[in-house]
Image (cartoon, rainbow, N blue to C red; front, top):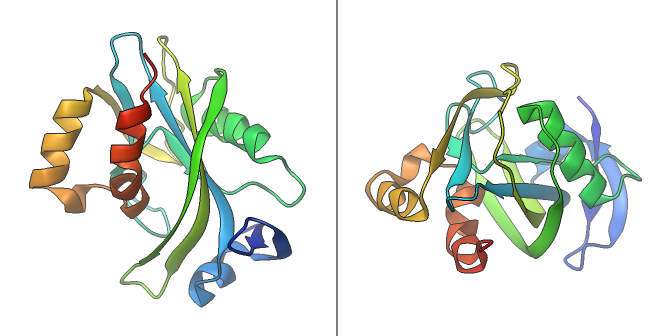
Length: 170
């Protein structure tokens, strides 16, 4: 595991900690979520790999992770997009939010989540260590599925969906 950046409620760094320990202690830390759309307005969703330490097998946005200590959040988002899905594209910051979600395995995500949006229309090459599956869906398909089956989706995706939908790239 690696170190992540602990932050205050204004996203000011206050230290670093090993990732699993921060999740066990439910400490607020810096994270990012990337939402990708194609020219048809569809959202790229990924299903998290089955062996992820939390939210395994759940559907979520294109990618999400934590920047390394000293790494700019935007650079980390571009890096992880390529590591998880095999491509790069221009990303634009959209908004940030804080959330806290407890998981049944003794871990808690307590994140200052920076949301980025981008456009992409070519091949997606998911890393099987990170991603079980990918799919493109319309916002309406996602909205209906979220209403019917919210437990199929990650906590942060459920929280960010409406805000992202309102800002979706034209």
